[in-house]
Length: 393
Image 1 (cartoon, rainbow, N blue to C red):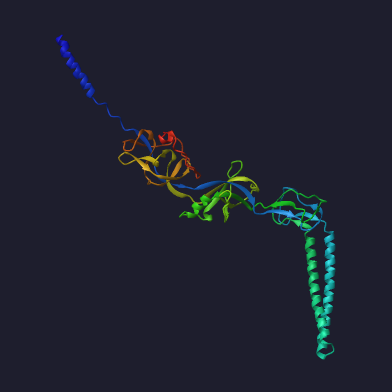
Image 2: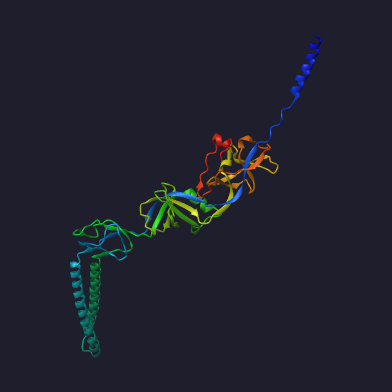
């Protein structure tokens, strides 16, 4: 019984000692960081575009007559000056012969009037003719000169009409379908006989928002047209092997769409581009720029704005507020709030808070990060996974 009484205080003492013992402190969490660094990037914008030709020619008849020949196969490439159509030249040859005869008669009349006036010049000095007769001869000479000039113009017009009976290609290019057939009577009012599209005068036509044009105009580093190149993505998704240059920016804004028309001249040596084709125009700087880049996955967003967690030289976590620009591949451009060399937490974000101590390890991706040159719109980082700092890069 006495043993029991002594045992109770001893047991109580032992239990109290157990309660006073502190659990071992948890080790600092491990985080994986990347170092913010200056990297080259190439700003780019993509627009829906269509292909147009500066040398899309409608071939029409300049004179009336029956079509006697079609000299091309539809869809062929033809050289400049190649024959396309012939119109019956017979009535125009006859008209030219009449005009030549009229000119010869006018020349003869002019020669006679000149001779009479020369004789009158001698006679008027000796008083053999009156002033009235002299004036008449002088007037006839002037009238004959005018008639000869009119006849010469009529002959030249007849020659032009005859030349119009032979229709040739005004440029090299691909000829379209022949609307008229041999035997059809054509005229200037008949309309288009065929079309001819030059192969080396293609343009990509696209619309850019007026806001984008205004931003570029107000920028301190406004690029020149010569600093910009235009690439194309073809309808099948392949990249066009040649780049072009901007040659035209409209001087007005489309009030219906709020956009400005832009045209880029595109080389077409392989005849891959056709008028009416729809493509994607990629507008980018020819020379790369340099900017501070960090992984997009490191970004966090809350009511105070965009931020990342960084680690200082004492391995303490800091919240760093920043401003970001365009996204390039898996990275995003930092425009304000961070210096090169900052250690940005990429994995383990959910384990830390500002001021906490961490164990730092360098992040090593399993595969090579894709940087690319095309800017990608910033994704919405308000979802739960991103704002909590997902371990996924």
